Length: 180
Ligand SMILES: Cc1cc2nc3c(=O)[nH]c(=O)nc-3n(C[C@H](O)[C@H](O)[C@H](O)COP(=O)(O)O)c2cc1C
Image (cartoon, rainbow, N blue to C red; front, top):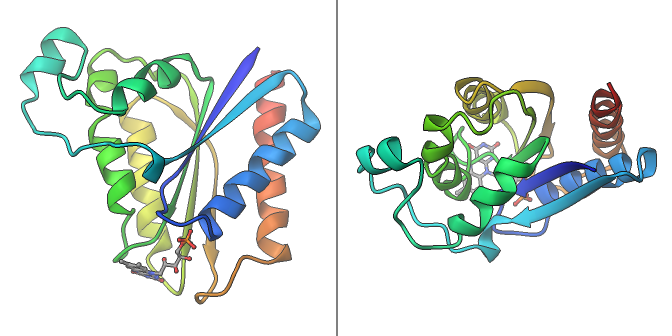
């Protein structure tokens, strides 16, 4: 059974969460044989990378004992990784940056190579393209294939019909690519 892991990088259950849930719902509507799991990053204790580098390069594992250890197996098994972030100072949130940095063991072991990725960035006004680029670079460095991205500008308002339509289209695209 194909697997989708969707990571919500906002501390809130607001816009990023809503858009990611809509992507998952679209995938599930289209394909019942795909399991999609939503990971809300604030529910996980993920410390920053301590920069030791050589331990994960040598062992393929991270020695920091926190909830990232629960996510490594999920990341290894998933077929699709969706990362959604609020735009914070024209960048990804700190929650997402820690998650990205802590993926270094998977980079050394090429564990994400060939998997599909999709990026979502929500801003109030601007900087979402920079946040999307950070996630796009993460996919590229891991040897993943980016299937799509959504940039949402909401001016601080809740997401509306247009954004949910984009989320639906991204979910449809992921589901159809997984069929191939
Ligand atoms: C620390 C912080 C930094 C922010 N920086 C930006 C920014 O650079 N550009 C922008 O348009 N919005 C910025 N915002 C607004 C958020 O991107 C926006 O409210 C977004 O919808 C939050 O996503 P969420 O509803 O999923 O939490 C910032 C918000 C916070 C809390």
